[in-house]
Image (cartoon, rainbow, N blue to C red; front, side, top):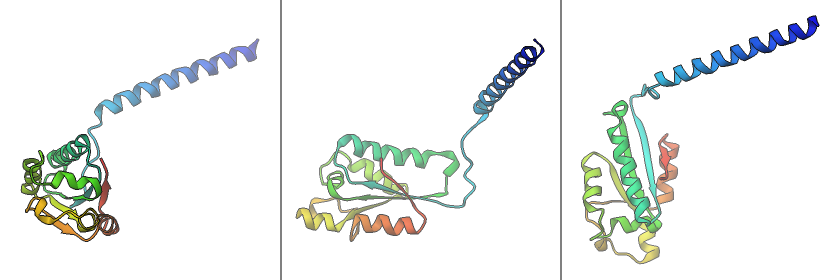
Length: 154
């Protein structure tokens, strides 16, 4: 009988302790405001290799959201590199011209892969004249990654 009583007492204490820890965790979660930006510079390169309008819009929206993050004000460097089907966003007459210009005006490097142009027989004259160019999109990603940039693929 005494052993059952001790066992029940341990179970009760364990349940109370677990419930207390759970309540503390919930309270702590309410107080969390996100990671602190303690570095001087944060670098991100966005990979846009999909021509889907939803993905293109999402990519532009993601970059704008990053630029608006108050923790990162004045601390972020961003590049957007398009290749493969992502090149469609940079074609003259696309619905993205003003949004892309807006990114550039906020300091974003907006680059196009030359390899894609060659493979798809696209002339630079078919694209916006405010673009930067890189030899290959994958090469740009690799170099940036080795320089410590974070690759983001929306």
